Amino acid sequence: MNHDSIQMILQEVIDDISTPAGLWQLAIVVAACCAAWAINGLLRASVMRHAPEHWKLGIGGINRVLFPLSTLIFVLMGKLILNYWQHTSLLLLASKLLLAMAAIRLVVYAVRYIIEPGGMLKTLENSIAGLIWILMALHLSGLLPEILNALEDIKFNIGKNPVNLLLALQGILTILVTIFIALWFSRMIENKLMRVQNINMNLRVVLSKLLRVFLLFLAILIALSAVGLDITMLSVFGGALGVGLGFGLQRIASNYVSGFIILLDKSMQIGDIVTIDSHYGVVSDLRTRYLVLRKLDGTEVIIPNETLITTPVINHSFTDHRGKISMPVQVGYDSPLELAMQLMVDIAVRNPRVLVEPAPAVQIKGFAESGIDLMLSFWIPDPEEGSGALQSDIYLEIWKAFNRNAISIPYPQREVRILNDKN
Image 1 (tube, rainbow, N blue to C red):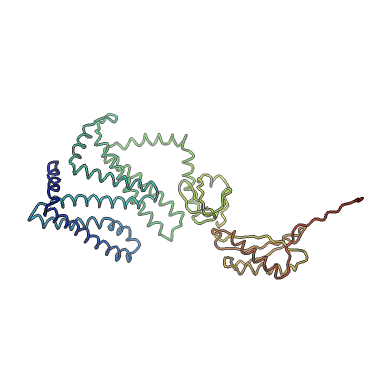
Image 2: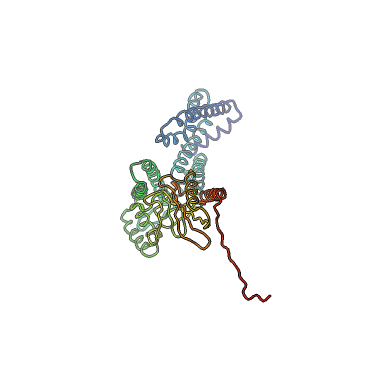
């Protein structure tokens, strides 16, 4: 569509605004929106609710563009009918805007599928939507061909090859689109891979990361070939990257290599309870560069993978996910010792978080100055939930039971004797 035809359409829209022809076209647009909204609601309620889980990705993409596309179909049907009696410039303009809306919704849906929620996602969504609307506005105003010609006239050389600015922008856009498609495919395959239960979780993570790197590398090669750049130039880039890794990026490279080692040797997995330096918590995520440790107070610690290789790590659930808790208690020398030990075991058994097997046990640890030292030991199946509240409840029950059975909990006492008191 050339500049003159666009200007003619806009002029016809302006002339038809307050005429019956314009009202008919506006009524068709409103009716098309209402019909599309009703169809969209019915399909979303019926299809999405009963669709299998692995279909929901495609159905979600269709849902995003269903409203603008179905509205477009109704608008085009109305345009086809009205063409027999009047011109339909407003409907033609509406169809172009609906196409832009469908493109924005589909691209934004794909971006949300690839990128994790956050500030970057919101910025990227707004940028994509703004860019598409700007291109549509330039196209409708007739300025887009003139801008493209101006960009094509700006020429420069890359090495010995003459290049214009329009070709450079097209190359950048081709690379971005290719990388975007590669990330979309990698996320789709990664989601399918993570649902495979007969493969170890660490192996699934490793495969998904390697797949993403491979698809990104392949996308860059395809994009460079598509824009006409010589792929042999990557050998120079690879040499420069190797030098950079050798000098300035060796710690980053070490973290990545350490991450793959940890994932492959299964020394740590998601859900393990570990102590790293002074941090105790649950491994909530394993990345290629760092580990995310969720502490029992809800805070998260990001620990570089190199630290996990070079420093000792206590994995409390390496062979068994259960956690052992030991609680010291001291009773007086005049207390019935066997009764105190039995009461402590009974109190531990009654707690719903304490495992019956292995059974709780009480051991005599020694004879102290003020009383007899006992140690109550038991196991819980969910140490990642913390043990502070649990120990508090058990100590309270021990205190009540000891009071009922006249069992004393001693405290330090000292006798002071004053010798040679002449007074």
